[in-house]
Image (cartoon, rainbow, N blue to C red; front, side, top):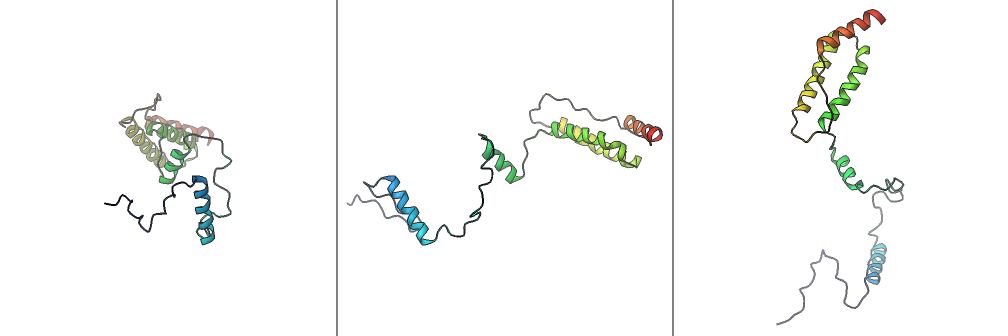
Length: 146
């Protein structure tokens, strides 16, 4: 019976030989790879490392992954609150009462959906907009200042 380990598969880099320091082994492998051209034409070659000058952030990798995956961790209530603020700010510039009503109803749907969310919510209260009252105020602003 032989106690020799089985040979490495061809796709696996060779193991570090016994008695050789890791640093020497790694340096040699890098030198060999450079000589073989394994580092030629890599994506981003010659470009600065993205985010290298950004302030240190222990959660950088989580944020990068969320961004790469197009995901968000903002609670729906906060998103709805921001949408509410933006729509109420934009309301005076809308020229059609029908459009005002439609956008307010859409916003209220978003707010109700956020309120019904099963995710743990931050301490923020976002209430639906009273559409009739908002339209009345919109109409009055257009007649008085319009």
